[in-house]
Length: 103
Length: 470
Image (cartoon, rainbow over all chains, first blue to last red; front, side, top):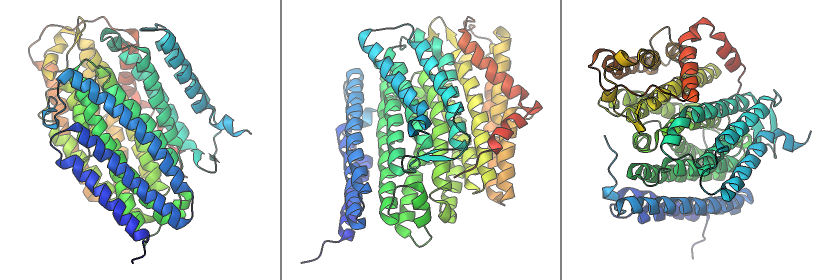
């Protein structure tokens, strides 16, 4: 059995973070996927913060996590609201069709 | 003295937002005095900020700082917010977006900016930033039956949320490798050998560069500026820049000052990239709002050049640059608000052709503001650039100064092109000449102060020279 150390948690966080960032850039279909990727990034940050908090024996990281969770919920609400009004105007939420502004 | 007295401006603003929100609930639809109440509460907040003691105070276990920098920047934020509301008054009335929510959300984003400016801790900074950006997402998509506005809001939301994610990842690394979220403790624990934390600094700089729209993280700026309603664009172009630059300065000079040689290269790169992109990409633009977006990217590049020097003179010159740039921007957007024929607003540069034959006074304002943006003496824009280049040359960063000067020349081309279209092209249908007094006042204030800055520049310089970084 290997001992699970801070390094493993950080690697997990880094992997989830990378999946989130890559998910935003290579996604060609749906905006909802982008929202999910953003949530993944925030969760990676939370994993980082909590593991650091335990490693350092310092409660600040866990408090930071609570704030991030709360704000992420608000952000998702605002994001979904914007997607809904966009859908009402345009009739689709295809990423490739979001291109009326360019130049 | 009680701690609550030190955060009186923020408390006052918070309670006025709550009050206006309650009014909004009980008056369905429009409520006429809301504009007056909003501006009054901003004025009172401004007075409360100006009354704060002129010393360095850290409250809430040293997580919230009130010093000269924060007081000056808060005054600027509030003042420019008032001026933007005055100048966009007519636009929001005609476009039917003068609802209670518009003002409440504007005020909330200002509250977020005030918190950002004073924050001395990563958590508090994050909360202020999110309060500000959540409100800005909503403002960008405020014309909710307009496809372009909602698209602007959507793009801004996605890219800004990504930037916030990167910034938070940086914050988590900084916290883990220095053991605290307080700026001063981070600064004490940070050194050259702390590679994890330096990795985090890169992420934080990327996130902050996104917020001040520095290249290569500028992608959202042109789209959002073009798509959102002009009143919101002028708010975007002016008010959040103050808070974003303050935060940038505070991050670089308080927690990260011990690793200055590591972040300096990155900031120099951001600055050069923004200056070049702002100069080159604006050349082919036909929409004046899009052109202002590229111009703002370029100007943020010059402001970052001052930050990159690593000296207190550099910071002071970049703050002076920011102030003068915002005054010019206010004037430019006041001019854009005047491009109107019977409730229709025009945005193309070609719509301006031959303006001088019909409206000589407005054309002169355009001339002054765009010459100043191009940096032609003796207008204020020239002095702003002069201070920046002086402080850059003082620390012997010649490459940065030379590239800055070259891009100034390139960017002069597209500013002068607009002047040429106004003065030498064939006249079109004249714009309406009946303006709201707020619009008129903000155009007059900005034009006169740009024009007459060179007579008595020490008013501004004396105020800024008192700024120190703690």
